Image 1 (cartoon, rainbow, N blue to C red):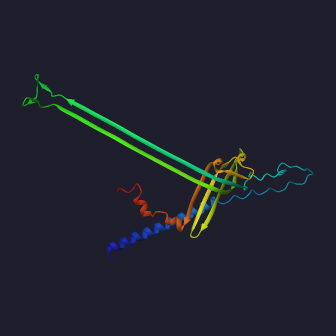
Image 2 (image 1 turned 90 degrees about the vertical axis):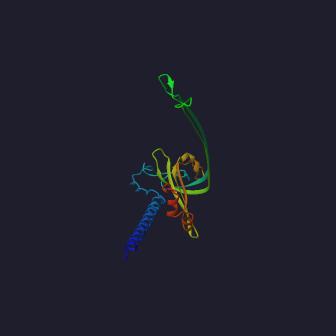
Length: 232
């Protein structure tokens, strides 16, 4: 067996092992991420207080009027997605510079150097440069709909940290939307809903997985040729 063929097989085996390791690592990260976004279960109730003849206890939850709005860990809250943002940027730059330098001929014993009656050492330098550049960028996005999350944590100031996800499986692909953020109880409407514009530190992710998502994704070689590391 020739040396080039052995070398080619070693390179192919190394690339295959690296690809399999990358796929395994990606799947492991996806599983860990899915576990972190799992729905939050309500906090387990404590054991009932001993019977001592009293009708009220500090640790006992007595709700005389039931409030349907989310306020406890594990409660469900509906988010109205009303995201509509538009951004534009335009810049123009113009510069110009002109330099002119004249150097006279030196004199020796009161006489200038000359050739044929003309100054031989006179010199002049003229430079000019200019730059004119412009650029513009426009971006807009819109996301509407309803999305339900759960209360993951109740902060010390009463605000609610919410988190949730929704999966839609369509044919050979999956659509995934995730949302997390902080909601003030006073911003929650009577129907237990709140607009996404009222969610602080909101992180909204809308992506996909599966055959359709892979078809819309560049391969690793195409990404390399389109990256900054490509010298041409």
